[in-house]
Amino acid sequence: MLVVWLFVGTGLAPAQEASLLTVGPGDVLEISVLGVDELSKKVRVLGDGTITLPLLGNFSVVGLTVSEAEAQIAKTLADGRLVNDPQVSIFVAESISGSVTVQGAVAKPGVYELFGQKTLLEVLGQAGGLNRQRGADILVLRRDESGQQQSLQVDATRLVEEGDVSLNIQLQPGDIVMVPVARSLRVYVTGAVNRPGAVEYSSSEGITVLQAVTAAGGPTERANLKKVTLRRRLADGSEESRDINLKKIQNGKEPDIPLERNDTIVVGEWLL
Image (tube, rainbow, N blue to C red; front, top):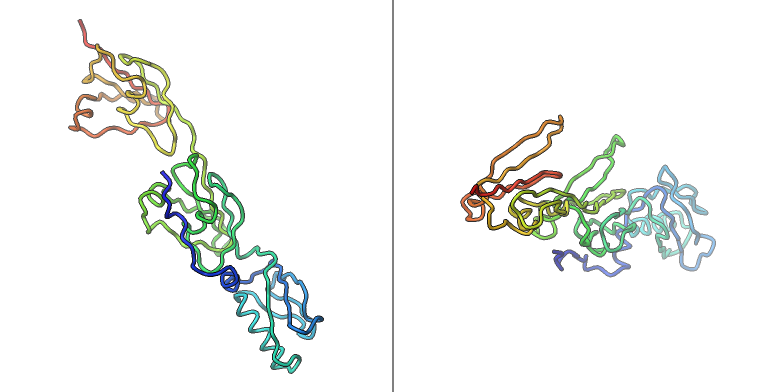
């Protein structure tokens, strides 16, 4: 179930948010100086974090917010007596370093600007929230200082539905938020049930013994719920078998048992 409070706004107007965007290599800036057309131009920030402006030459803007870059350029023009009372404005036409990418089971996948600091929930909100096809986890792919890619795994149910704020991590420029689509998996229920065979379930929700037996039409009149067997194929090819008292699970005397993909449940019968 998707909760409405998934989107948390910043409370800032678009122009205010834009002024908080940090400039980085690869970004395209449209710089305007009021009344000085020759200083108004569109430039791309170079790999070393500099731009080239008439009268100023190479000018470093990397790591500055848009408002800080405007103030720095204005100060440099004023200090050099190049422009009297310079009024500088910068529009980020294309932001590469200050954005995150959201992919997978969201309403609006795409690239989203990081205006100031943004959390995982805020960016998911911008992307329209998770859809019903989402898997159990959200992955945040991030490169560390050495350039190696890290994968941060976040439990989607705990974050979105249960509101566990400890999982609402701060995103960084360049992060990739991947919301995998849930897979359709199967377990098998045989023996004394009304519809023996395969039972499908979503990987994001899982399934238990009691749920699987219920999905198979429930036990027949001859079913012996005290004699249920769980069979599981292990990684080495061997089979593990476990006896289950489903009657106690139904009565709440024993916990229900989560199943794994391709498990088989055999519901025994009473002997005549």
